[in-house]
Length: 263
Length: 263
Image 1: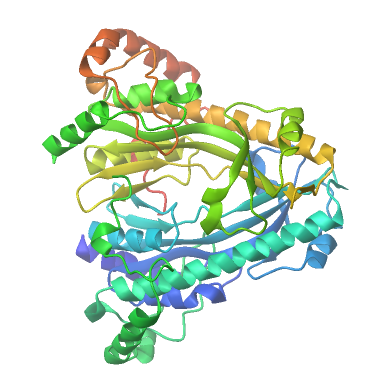
Image 2: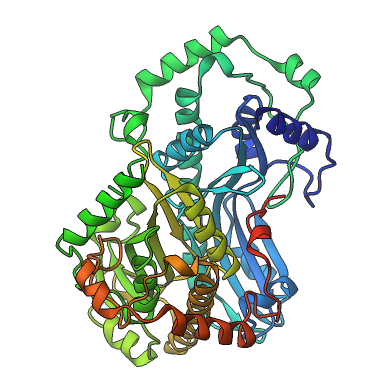
């Protein structure tokens, strides 16, 4: 199993990037780098979070979602003027969505997946979960409950006043801010939870892969080149323990206690 | 581990129902009964899906969600008049949500959780996942990507015309219909996937437990009383194979193939 995981990781390194965008979203390159620099993990897809406008056929079901046109995509905050401008080209049913951070990570052993899952839950990503395939692939999916999905037009006709679109953009932007806070918490909690002797930290972040598409990882040479001192990283982590916390309430819960979510 | 699972299940049977509603939602009693009648599983919480109006403090963050007032809850389709009437009593920021079916099931062994997970994914619940606690509790969470979340008012003032609320209610109702179709598919796929010799099928469904609260299970005597013939059930399943399918495309994929979601 151990050998198999290494082979999978190696294959992932050698694969060409299949994403449209061709790069990991900038707000999560440090998270992706940290995990890919770790022997126990490699990321398979990610999205930092996005605000989107989707134009679909009227009353189309979920099944036909693939025929939709994307009128607007932003991985950062948006302005309502941008949304209004994008809406002008619509002829179907437009829906505005905020989709939070999502990350899929293949894990060497079940206990590695459990650790990652507990960190995700403690960082606010409460819809996270594992997948264990029959071939032995173990994936932790990091997911949030945090969303927004509001119809804006029907058959090309706007259903709401411009003031509503302005209000929605503000709501989505607040959710984007909260999303970034959770990503930050997730990264800090990862640094605290990962076994320090196994960390192969690489800065700056890798620049491949994106939402729902395989990540291309750094080659071993690239990682070696970027590796920073474990002792330097340890100093940073000690500092973090003085200034940050798991839940923003000043306390750092024991990871041992984290997985008992359903007791 | 085997013995421990039986103890946990027994404890769950003896616990008092902690839900507000005091019963499993009627659209999923058959699903809950089927799983609880099975040696490998017991359900710990569920919701069949709901349309809700939540009145929160203006610009309140996710953190303070607990202070919200629920103006409207329906586990079935809604009428826009009901929503408009409920909105009249609002003084804060009202959000309308459609929340799909959610189910948490404790599983005896990892392979039982894998089986349940594969059935969930194949039935359209693509955000499903496992949790494995350090104490050995294994939970499969059945979750959908299917949602809706639209702000309706700010500081007690309506942001949208009544026509929009009408459109939203129709959208939510369509999602509720699709949700029920997925629940039906999940139940049929469960019947096909569960090892028949271990099924302890109980009809009519149990009547305890609800969203995010522990389920009270039937006692062994209650189950014994309601147990139907395995042969009768087998006949029904054979019929199902002729008339239904996993993906609604006429084909029944092999479960062995189902878990390789990320290959």
